[in-house]
Image (cartoon, rainbow, N blue to C red; front, side, top):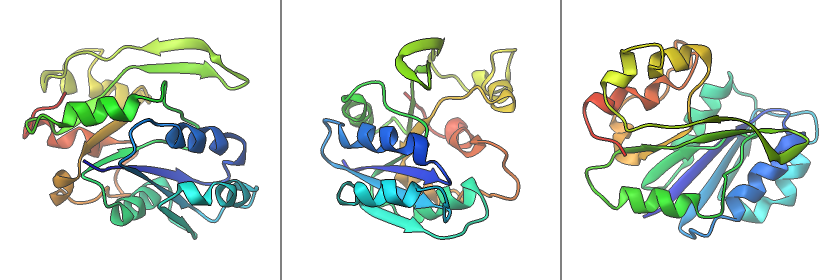
Length: 193
């Protein structure tokens, strides 16, 4: 199973190197990294060119924002599973994608998510906050102060990976979304892990 990781960038030269290294260091080999840059002006392209051999796709052109860039990434991705890793994010360990592939080995699974560790910019070994995931239920989307919709509104959500076969759903509508709501819409139609 091939996993496509999409990273959207714009003027991210200071953090992008760690993101690229994090994907490149994954033990799971059947992966591709698709990077869509919004015509950065701060040296981001220099960072990307230095890692060019690790990228399946590198596209740098003006866009209409992060969701336009993510849509371009989805269009260029060739994996069975698609995930987003933002330019200032890293995976917690080199076996994250292996765990994702293991979860998706179950054909009933259409989405996975996990815990988040918020770390200091200047010392990524120092965890300052942890968000612990819980077993998914559709009720968690809308019920209570800890609901995912409440987290979406406050920006407290986790990165997701989902089966590329869900791409029958329209791409992310960059005019109406202010966050990653699309990740959660198919949840009532298919189980997640």
